[in-house]
Length: 129
Image (tube, rainbow, N blue to C red; front, side, top):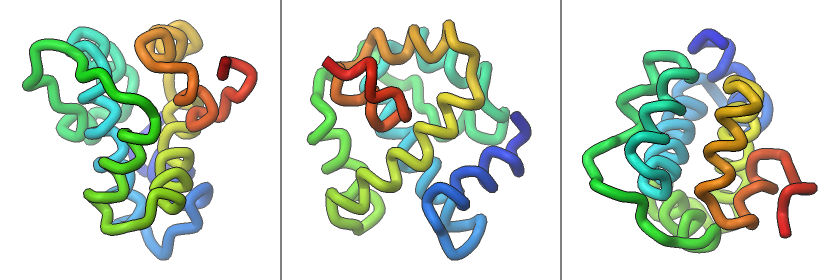
C-alpha cells in the first residue's frame, strides 16, 4: 500500500478533517505500538508499511515494554491531547489500516506479541480472548 493510500484510509476511517491530522494520529499510534513490540518485529512491520512511516516506528529500545491495551490508549490520548475514548477511535483507524497493509503472516506476528485486547483495535475481534 502506498503512503497516500494509507493516509487516505486512516483519514476516512477516523473521519479526520485533513491528511495532516490523519498523519499525526498515524505517527502517534505507530509510535506507541512500536514500544509494545520487540525491536525485530518493529523492523519487520516497518518493512511492510510505506517507507515514510518508518520513522514513526522507533527501534531505540532493547525489548518490548509490557503494557495492556488501556495503557496503550492512555499513551495515545496523552500524545494527541484526546480522551481515551477518542484514542481508541484513533488507534482503531490506524491499526485497521495496518491490518490491511501488511501480510496475514506479519499481522499474526504482531498480534502474537500483544495481549488479546489489542486484536479488536486491528479489526479482528474474533481473536480477542
